[in-house]
Length: 82
Image 1 (cartoon, rainbow, N blue to C red):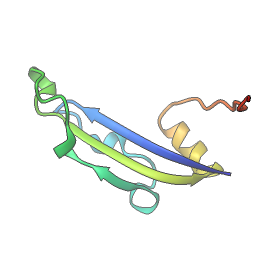
Image 2: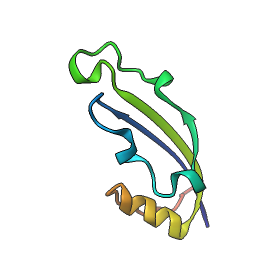
Image 3: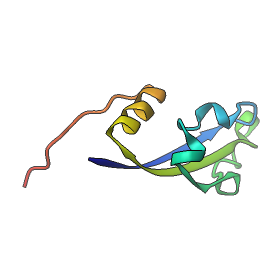
């Protein structure tokens, strides 16, 4: 089984975006967006000059579980009903 993941992150200017990078970012993930896609520049304060990244990857089950754990998320299996 493979998992197609699109992972998007926005942070305030004083927070290093690298803290939110997915595991094995250089090996498994393709960066598809950077700061040029930051949509919150209209905000004031720390968000005015924040940072943005979007990464995409196709992960196997083990890599997906590592990603979910890294992000402190919970995955749930659901069946498609027709």
